[in-house]
Amino acid sequence: MNNKLSRREFLQFAGAAAAATTLAACGGASLPAPTAPAATPEPSSPTADQALALLRDGNARYVAAKMVRPNQGTDRRASLSAGQKPFAIIFSCVDSRVPPELAFDRGLGDLFVIRTAGHAIDRAALGSIQFGVEELHIPLIVVMGHEKCGAVSATLDAVEKNAHAAGDIEALVQAIKPAIEKSKNQTGDKLDNAVKTNTVLTVEALKANAILGEEVKKGKLMIVGTRYDLDTGMVEMLA
Image 1 (cartoon, helix red, strand yellow):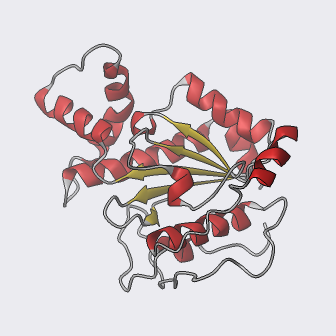
Image 2 (spheres, one colour):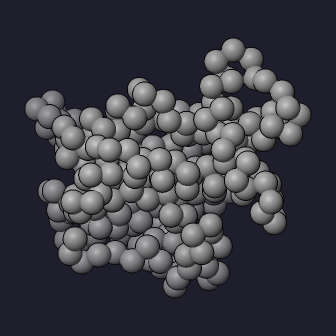
């Protein structure tokens, strides 16, 4: 892919002075938040790197409360009746505090969003992601975990108490449990460590999928993991 955007550049969307510490040990210089929409038009068919840059810029606007809310007018709505061409798949948690379209300051037809509690992978979620890649040719998948995730917290509690969750919630516990086990010996906040590990494991699982992994090998698809901060609205790179 040409003009590759450094993942370090993605790490600090809001221009904070300190670099975030993540599982992947990524760090980098801060980025200033834009104060106005880009002067040049957005590419009609963004590459993965360009798509990542669009998300970076949108999140910077969101954090700085300088949203431009692109592609939300009646003309955009009418044009999409003929078909859609989203530039990124966002696989995130169902938490009402983490709306991808708002966090990345995007509009109609921009993002192909799949949400499950704790972004747990099931067949429906995986099929939806594969559909976005195979049928809509979306070049970027962003897995977005978030601070204080309730699904991860419930799984952590269940594991520590050797308990089972009610009904089909147990399926979520089993999906997230590997992250609890893998992060249990890490220093620092147990819940946040588990949230980050859960995101990284989800990225690894998607890359290991035969269909998605093949697209990654061909250079047609990029899959990255991120963490959303509830307090600041900032999205940081994990993997």
